[in-house]
Length: 351
Ligand code: FUC
Image 1 (tube, protein in one colour):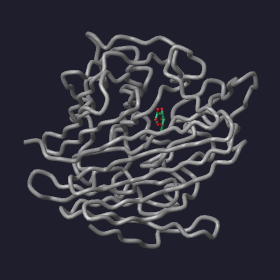
Image 2: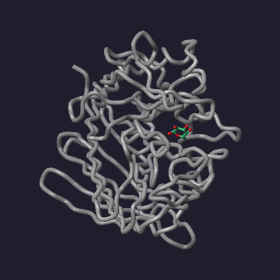
Image 3: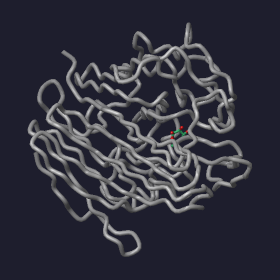
Image 4: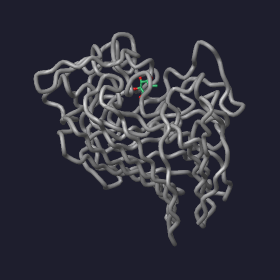
């Protein structure tokens, strides 16, 4: 196992380092000490070809100009908070409005746009990157000084393990995830519409036109949202289901997981044979199928023009806007309590 380090770029005169963890099978993960951004995951297909399977850029300028959160850690709050405000313990907090009148993915300068102090650790069968960030009280409108730790581990079982730990000196909101866009075809050869996805979930969250939860939790039964026995992503593109249409002809929805840490999410690209198994202790996963990737100002992702459905996100997390929906699992982090969660991504070949 090896960890390589190289200069990646600069923001405001501060150097950004790219760290590449390589395991004994040749699998590689590259990430930055800015946003904990995963810029590359290089994994083998069934013929032993190693190719990149995530959306990312080779310069920080492109991230700053174009990135819809490619590969980054999202916080303090993944997903939307309606009207960018909430009430906690009798006090109203105003958050940054960065998605119409709402708050999205932690605000204008969330965890994806800050420097993280980074330590490396090399063990016999794994390599680790430990990222630390102190989010000060008042940042983006949130209360409490919040100390965050995120660890990326790559091991010799071809697993990436992301663990999160957060502690605040005042009660606050915390709902974190990683926003990697996967495309298992390799080097963006094809879009993700033919990827096959299985999710152990019987219920998903209904969204309104602004992609805010209505408060209703719907059954997946007899809808394109039933991934329990696996289905292709393209089923949701022209399904005629109002929820697919609202999302921009695809998926942008939280699914409540019926099982945790037991192969609850499986993504497969039959053509390359690549399979990704995700296990988490979070209550939900947001499936976002890149329905808005075709930006007004066109740009390229390592030479491939950006277009809708070029990548998909599987964001393990709590539910968006939970603070306004008391029947959703809570994302309140109480003063002095420690938040912890772990998500494991196992990269393999379907036999
Ligand atoms: C996802 C979606 C949003 C948004 C963003 C880039 O998580 O939920 O709708 O487009 O990422």
